Amino acid sequence: MLTPEWIRTHVEGYQDLSDDAFLTKIHRDIATLARAGVPLESWQSADGQGTVYRLQSEQYQLPEVSFTPEESTVLGLAGEMGHSGELGVFARSGWTKLAAAGASRDLSQTPVFSTVNDVTVLPARMLTSILTIIRAGFRMSFSYTATPASTPVKRTMDPWGLVPLHDRLYLVGYDVDRQAPRSFRILRISDVHAKRTRAVHTETATSLQKIVEDSLRVGRQRIDALLSIPEGSAHELAAAGTRRPDGLVELRDVDRDWLVRTAAGFAYVVELIEPADAREEIIALLSEVH
Image (cartoon, rainbow, N blue to C red; front, side, top):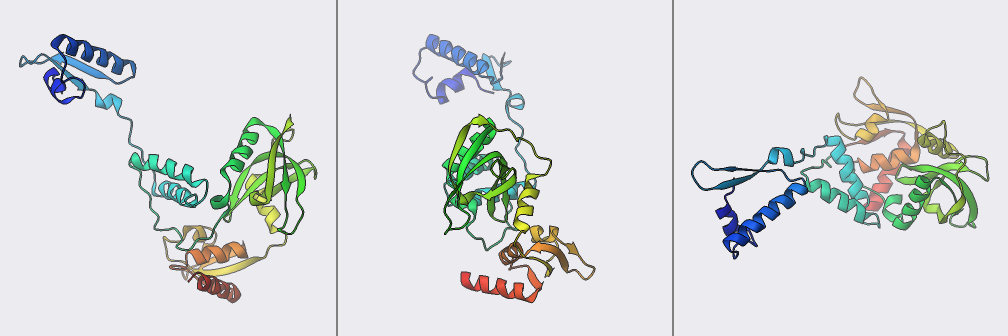
């Protein structure tokens, strides 16, 4: 509770005013706060000190921002993913606002080993262009380079969305040239432009994630694996398999490249027991890092 005398003494801008000017200013400021939605109440004090003012904080304060440990971890990882690239500005800005509201993040389950992924090197301008075209519902064209030695090929697509998978980011949509759904790794496309025509194929009965996964199965090695994963750790790996009665986790028909890189990231707690050649690949990968 604040009295006019306290406000006049402690609040900047009130100290050097005459009595009439002080009353005019405080009444004007109270009206301005009311128009801004700041709830104030005033009453005559019983001890003869005149009008007393109080901020109705129970009506003004927003509810506390809270996240589950899993949500906080995802938000924290999102910020770390964009730390060194052009998207880092957005990531750091978003997390700063959440942290200022009292959110905390638990990164105890994050890999200690990470590779450069598509998000860290993705130009912000390209991401903005693609998302704008998708939201506007236009057809798009772009150049696609299948391999570093290939000649860029012009492609036309009705875009559906972006899908992150195994540290990579894919553009998914209906390929007008091939007359079928297709996915393209975003780092292999360039010269993105919106067409003058609207997108025709705007929906798909299959999830975008499945389209990407199915396209990656062609030419990629799938393996079974056996890992030692302590309870409550390396959730990404544990969730992909089944824990046996002896405590070991069994994975069936998983992408070999994903398994090697992910297991290497959790090498401080996870041991890949089988297959032996994948285990040796992890050891070689970690040796290169050190």
